Image 1 (cartoon, rainbow, N blue to C red):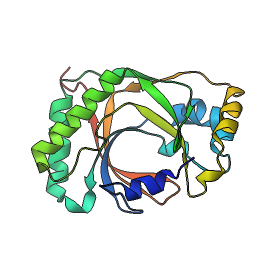
Image 2 (cartoon, helix red, strand yellow):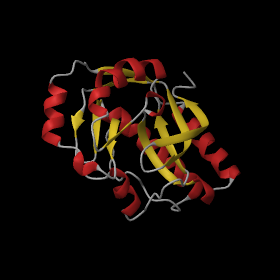
Image 3 (cartoon, rainbow, N blue to C red):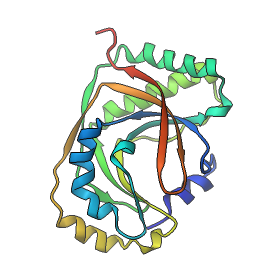
Length: 209
Protein backbone atom coordinates (compact mmCIF):
# COMPACT_ATOMS: atom_id res chain seq x y z
CA UNK A 1 0.00 0.00 0.00
CA UNK A 2 1.04 3.63 -0.51
CA UNK A 3 1.76 6.12 2.27
CA UNK A 4 -1.46 8.11 2.82
CA UNK A 5 0.31 10.89 4.70
CA UNK A 6 2.95 11.36 2.00
CA UNK A 7 0.10 11.79 -0.47
CA UNK A 8 -1.61 14.61 1.47
CA UNK A 9 1.77 16.29 2.06
CA UNK A 10 2.72 16.26 -1.62
CA UNK A 11 -0.55 17.14 -3.37
CA UNK A 12 -0.99 20.54 -5.04
CA UNK A 13 -2.65 21.98 -1.93
CA UNK A 14 -0.47 20.25 0.63
CA UNK A 15 -1.39 19.51 4.23
CA UNK A 16 1.91 19.32 6.17
CA UNK A 17 2.32 17.55 9.53
CA UNK A 18 1.04 19.35 12.65
CA UNK A 19 -0.59 22.21 10.72
CA UNK A 20 -4.14 22.70 11.95
CA UNK A 21 -6.59 22.89 9.06
CA UNK A 22 -10.30 23.61 9.35
CA UNK A 23 -12.49 20.63 8.46
CA UNK A 24 -16.18 19.83 8.54
CA UNK A 25 -16.77 16.31 9.86
CA UNK A 26 -19.49 13.87 10.80
CA UNK A 27 -18.27 12.23 14.02
CA UNK A 28 -19.93 8.93 15.03
CA UNK A 29 -20.82 8.50 18.71
CA UNK A 30 -17.80 7.03 20.49
CA UNK A 31 -19.56 3.91 21.86
CA UNK A 32 -20.77 3.07 18.36
CA UNK A 33 -17.33 3.71 16.92
CA UNK A 34 -15.64 1.50 19.49
CA UNK A 35 -18.10 -1.40 19.50
CA UNK A 36 -19.15 -1.57 15.83
CA UNK A 37 -16.34 0.05 13.82
CA UNK A 38 -13.12 -0.41 15.81
CA UNK A 39 -13.19 -3.67 17.75
CA UNK A 40 -14.46 -5.97 14.93
CA UNK A 41 -11.57 -4.89 12.67
CA UNK A 42 -8.86 -4.16 15.22
CA UNK A 43 -6.74 -7.14 14.15
CA UNK A 44 -6.91 -5.95 10.56
CA UNK A 45 -6.10 -2.30 11.33
CA UNK A 46 -3.06 -3.23 13.44
CA UNK A 47 -1.27 -5.18 10.71
CA UNK A 48 2.30 -4.10 9.77
CA UNK A 49 2.52 -0.97 7.68
CA UNK A 50 -0.84 0.40 8.89
CA UNK A 51 -1.72 3.19 11.32
CA UNK A 52 -5.00 2.24 13.04
CA UNK A 53 -7.64 4.90 13.70
CA UNK A 54 -8.72 4.91 17.35
CA UNK A 55 -12.45 5.15 18.11
CA UNK A 56 -12.18 8.75 19.37
CA UNK A 57 -10.69 9.86 16.04
CA UNK A 58 -13.02 8.00 13.67
CA UNK A 59 -14.79 10.42 11.35
CA UNK A 60 -16.48 10.98 8.03
CA UNK A 61 -14.95 13.98 6.26
CA UNK A 62 -17.36 16.40 4.62
CA UNK A 63 -15.02 19.24 3.61
CA UNK A 64 -11.35 20.12 4.11
CA UNK A 65 -11.44 23.91 4.32
CA UNK A 66 -8.14 25.77 4.86
CA UNK A 67 -5.36 26.42 7.37
CA UNK A 68 -6.75 27.69 10.65
CA UNK A 69 -4.08 30.38 10.86
CA UNK A 70 -5.19 31.85 7.52
CA UNK A 71 -8.61 32.76 8.95
CA UNK A 72 -9.46 35.26 11.66
CA UNK A 73 -11.47 34.25 14.70
CA UNK A 74 -14.33 36.35 13.34
CA UNK A 75 -14.24 34.47 10.02
CA UNK A 76 -14.33 31.12 11.80
CA UNK A 77 -17.39 32.30 13.73
CA UNK A 78 -18.98 33.58 10.52
CA UNK A 79 -18.29 30.26 8.80
CA UNK A 80 -20.00 28.32 11.59
CA UNK A 81 -22.95 30.72 11.56
CA UNK A 82 -23.33 30.49 7.79
CA UNK A 83 -23.29 26.70 7.84
CA UNK A 84 -25.81 26.70 10.70
CA UNK A 85 -28.12 28.99 8.72
CA UNK A 86 -28.04 26.70 5.69
CA UNK A 87 -28.15 23.44 7.68
CA UNK A 88 -31.33 24.53 9.44
CA UNK A 89 -33.27 23.61 6.29
CA UNK A 90 -31.58 20.24 5.81
CA UNK A 91 -33.06 17.18 7.49
CA UNK A 92 -30.96 14.75 9.50
CA UNK A 93 -30.50 11.34 7.89
CA UNK A 94 -29.11 7.84 8.35
CA UNK A 95 -25.77 6.99 6.75
CA UNK A 96 -24.99 3.28 6.41
CA UNK A 97 -21.33 2.26 6.40
CA UNK A 98 -20.37 -0.96 4.66
CA UNK A 99 -17.87 -3.52 5.84
CA UNK A 100 -14.35 -2.24 5.12
CA UNK A 101 -12.57 -2.35 1.79
CA UNK A 102 -8.79 -2.60 1.36
CA UNK A 103 -7.79 0.46 -0.64
CA UNK A 104 -4.41 1.63 -1.92
CA UNK A 105 -3.74 4.10 0.92
CA UNK A 106 -6.30 3.17 3.60
CA UNK A 107 -8.79 0.63 4.86
CA UNK A 108 -12.17 2.30 4.70
CA UNK A 109 -15.89 1.70 4.87
CA UNK A 110 -17.95 3.32 2.12
CA UNK A 111 -21.23 4.97 3.07
CA UNK A 112 -24.62 5.46 1.47
CA UNK A 113 -26.74 7.33 0.53
CA UNK A 114 -24.04 9.37 -1.14
CA UNK A 115 -26.49 12.07 -2.21
CA UNK A 116 -27.27 13.10 1.38
CA UNK A 117 -23.56 13.35 2.18
CA UNK A 118 -22.94 15.39 -0.98
CA UNK A 119 -25.60 17.85 0.14
CA UNK A 120 -23.47 18.50 3.22
CA UNK A 121 -20.34 18.82 1.08
CA UNK A 122 -22.07 21.32 -1.23
CA UNK A 123 -23.61 23.22 1.68
CA UNK A 124 -20.30 23.68 3.53
CA UNK A 125 -18.50 24.64 0.31
CA UNK A 126 -21.07 27.30 -0.55
CA UNK A 127 -20.96 28.63 3.02
CA UNK A 128 -17.15 28.74 2.86
CA UNK A 129 -17.23 30.73 -0.39
CA UNK A 130 -19.74 33.14 1.13
CA UNK A 131 -17.33 33.89 4.00
CA UNK A 132 -13.81 33.66 2.52
CA UNK A 133 -14.44 33.67 -1.24
CA UNK A 134 -11.93 31.64 -3.25
CA UNK A 135 -9.16 31.80 -0.64
CA UNK A 136 -9.25 28.02 -0.14
CA UNK A 137 -9.66 25.34 -2.83
CA UNK A 138 -12.42 22.75 -2.93
CA UNK A 139 -11.11 19.66 -1.12
CA UNK A 140 -12.14 17.04 -1.97
CA UNK A 141 -12.97 18.01 -5.54
CA UNK A 142 -15.55 15.22 -5.63
CA UNK A 143 -17.07 13.64 -2.57
CA UNK A 144 -18.28 10.27 -1.35
CA UNK A 145 -18.95 9.25 2.26
CA UNK A 146 -16.36 7.02 3.88
CA UNK A 147 -14.80 6.25 7.24
CA UNK A 148 -11.18 5.10 7.57
CA UNK A 149 -10.22 2.26 9.92
CA UNK A 150 -6.49 2.54 9.20
CA UNK A 151 -4.10 4.52 7.02
CA UNK A 152 -1.02 3.19 5.29
CA UNK A 153 1.99 4.95 6.82
CA UNK A 154 5.65 5.35 6.00
CA UNK A 155 5.99 1.54 6.07
CA UNK A 156 2.90 1.04 3.96
CA UNK A 157 4.90 -1.17 1.63
CA UNK A 158 4.71 -3.83 4.37
CA UNK A 159 0.91 -3.97 4.05
CA UNK A 160 0.12 -6.73 1.57
CA UNK A 161 -3.33 -6.04 0.13
CA UNK A 162 -3.94 -9.65 -0.81
CA UNK A 163 -3.15 -10.86 2.69
CA UNK A 164 -5.30 -8.10 4.20
CA UNK A 165 -8.26 -9.07 2.02
CA UNK A 166 -7.90 -12.68 3.11
CA UNK A 167 -7.76 -11.67 6.78
CA UNK A 168 -10.81 -9.42 6.36
CA UNK A 169 -12.79 -12.28 4.83
CA UNK A 170 -12.45 -14.21 8.12
CA UNK A 171 -13.54 -11.36 10.40
CA UNK A 172 -17.14 -10.88 11.57
CA UNK A 173 -18.82 -7.53 11.11
CA UNK A 174 -21.92 -6.00 9.57
CA UNK A 175 -22.95 -2.69 7.98
CA UNK A 176 -23.26 0.08 10.57
CA UNK A 177 -25.82 2.89 10.51
CA UNK A 178 -24.77 6.34 11.76
CA UNK A 179 -27.42 8.93 12.61
CA UNK A 180 -26.22 12.16 10.98
CA UNK A 181 -27.71 14.94 13.07
CA UNK A 182 -24.73 17.27 13.50
CA UNK A 183 -21.87 18.79 11.54
CA UNK A 184 -18.66 19.44 13.47
CA UNK A 185 -16.24 22.23 12.60
CA UNK A 186 -12.79 21.19 13.80
CA UNK A 187 -9.16 22.26 13.66
CA UNK A 188 -7.56 19.04 12.43
CA UNK A 189 -3.92 17.95 12.19
CA UNK A 190 -1.85 14.85 11.57
CA UNK A 191 1.55 13.64 12.76
CA UNK A 192 2.13 11.14 9.92
CA UNK A 193 0.55 8.39 12.00
CA UNK A 194 -2.70 9.75 13.39
CA UNK A 195 -5.30 12.42 12.61
CA UNK A 196 -6.64 14.41 15.56
CA UNK A 197 -8.66 17.59 16.06
CA UNK A 198 -10.05 20.25 18.36
CA UNK A 199 -13.80 20.83 18.04
CA UNK A 200 -14.58 24.49 17.33
CA UNK A 201 -18.34 24.36 16.68
CA UNK A 202 -21.23 21.90 16.49
CA UNK A 203 -23.99 22.64 13.99
CA UNK A 204 -27.30 20.68 14.16
CA UNK A 205 -29.15 19.70 11.02
CA UNK A 206 -32.80 20.68 10.76
CA UNK A 207 -32.58 23.42 13.36
CA UNK A 208 -35.79 25.02 12.08
CA UNK A 209 -37.75 21.80 12.11
